[in-house]
Structures are given as C-alpha cells and as structure tokens.
Image (tube, rainbow, N blue to C red; front, side):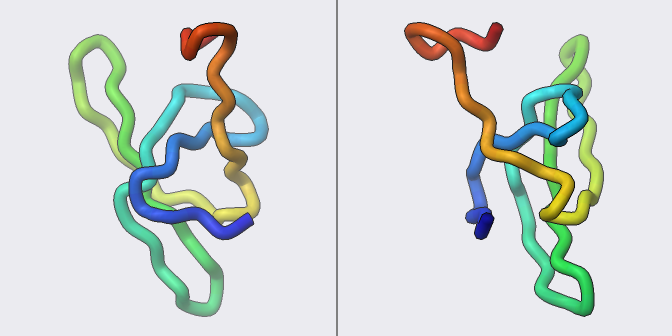
Length: 63
C-alpha cells in the first residue's frame, strides 16, 4: 500500500495508532510515524510493509 503524509496507521502486529509524518524512498521504503502516549509525543521509523491503514470502530471511535 502506498501511504501519504497524514495517513493514520498501525503496525500489523498491533500497537498505538500513529500518524505518518515523513516518507523515504531509499533502498527500503520507510515511514516516520508519530503518536501520543500519556500526553508524551513519540515517533519511530518503520518499513511500510510493517504498517496497515488504521480503521476506526463504529462512529469513528478507537476500539
């Protein structure tokens, strides 16, 4: 899947809901993602193959 800046994603293995904040197109496509936990901003870089688009539950709530 091709992600764009601002997409809401999650690791395929689970974890926090994150926002794509940067993309790199080098040898391995990577996405920098940002999320908040306990009012603290965190970020990490992940291979795009490890991410999937996040789908909110009914009425847009995170389940």
